[in-house]
Length: 479
Image 1 (tube, rainbow, N blue to C red):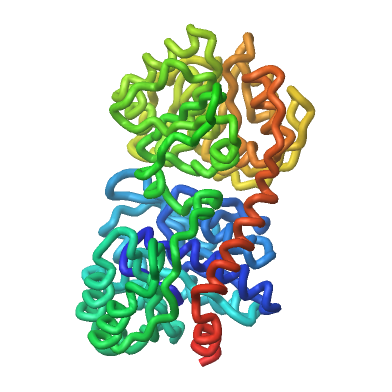
Image 2: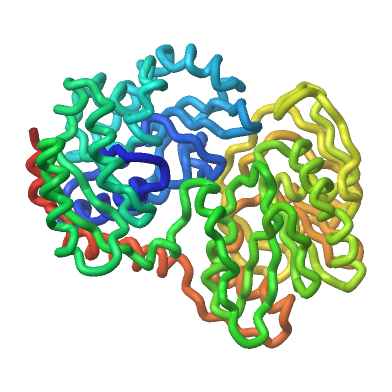
C-alpha cells in the first residue's frame, strides 16, 4: 500500500506507473483505492462509477475498470457534504460528521472488494487517501492505516519534495503514528525531485536515523504527468493556459465551484494549436474566445448561482452576441437551458431556478442516475464518439429535436449553442478534429491522443524502473 504524507504527493501517478511496469514484467496487477474523494469519475463496464485515477490505473494494467477498484467514492457537493458512492452505486448524501459514523459500516464492503481483486491478481497495488498523519480522523478509518491494518498490508510512505518540507513531513508522520502503525511502514519514496539526487543522500540518512525507514528510491520530476488525467480539482489550482502558439483556437472553460469530470478537456489541452484556459473565480470570461465550454458539476443549482455571482452570465451573453460558440457538457448542458429544478433535493435543498436561457430545454432532477458507456456516431460530421453518461435528471424541450449526439443532446436554431450529456467525447481523434475544424475552417489535426496516453504510461513505467528499487518492492509484496 502506498500512503502519502499529504494529498497530491503523486500516489495515483506512482500506482499507475508501477502497475504498467509490473504488468510488463508479466504479473497480473490490479489497482485498489479503498476510499476516494473526487468529482472526476469514470463509468465502469459493470454499470457503476469509480474515481478517474483508478480507471487510468486499470488501463495501465491492461484490464477493464471495475467498481471493486474503488469501493467508496465521495463526490463533494458542498464544503461539508458529499454524495457517497459504494461499489459503484449511490448510497446517499452525507455531511462530514455523519460520514464518520458511517465509515465502520463500509469497511466490510471495502474488504469484500479488496478480496475480489486478490482472486484476480498476483499483485494488488493499494493507494491511500490524504495522509495517515491525520490522526484526528483515525477512528473508523478505511482509507489509510485503518484499511492497512484490516487487510494486514505493508506500507510505503510517499513524500513530495517539490512542495518543500519533505523531511519534516516524513519524520513528523513517524512522530504522530502509534508504534504499531510506524512498524507497518517499511520504507519511503521521495517523489518529484528536481536537480541532482545525490545531494539528497544526507537527508535520506537523517530520515532513516529518525524513523528506521529505508528509502525505496528518489524519483525525479516526471514532466509527462500533465498528459495523464488528474485525480481531482487540486490540479486546477496550478492550471495555466495551454500553449497554442501563433493564432490558436481559443477555448475558455469557467471553473465552476463543484467542477466535475474536467478530464473531458485533456485532449484539447494536448492539441498544439489550441489554447485552453480554465477561468478562475473573479476573472471574466475572455473576450477573444472562439468557444466557451460549460463543464460538468456535482451541484448544478449551486453552480448556477456561482456562475452568476462571477458575472459570467453577462460575459457569456456578450460572447454569444459577438458570434462566439458555446458548448455545455452534462451539468453545463443543463445550465444552458431555460430552468433547472431539483424538487427532491438530490443535489442540495429542493429548489428551482431560471437557467442561462441559451437553449430551449428544461431540466428536472430525479430518477435513477444514468451510468452508461457510449459508442455512437455524431449527427454533424459522421464521426465515431466514445464516452460515457453520468448524470441525474432529465432534459426536455424543443431544441432537443436538433439532437446531434444521441437523443440526450440539443442545439440552438443557428447551431452556435450545443448541449450534450456525453463525457469524454473529445478523446476520439477524428471527432475532435472535425469539431475544431468547425471553429477554424481549414484546420487539419494530427494528434493521436489515446496513443499518447499509453505512450506516457510506458514512459512513466520506464522512469520508475530507473529510479525505484523495484526488487525491494516486490520482496515487500511477497511478504
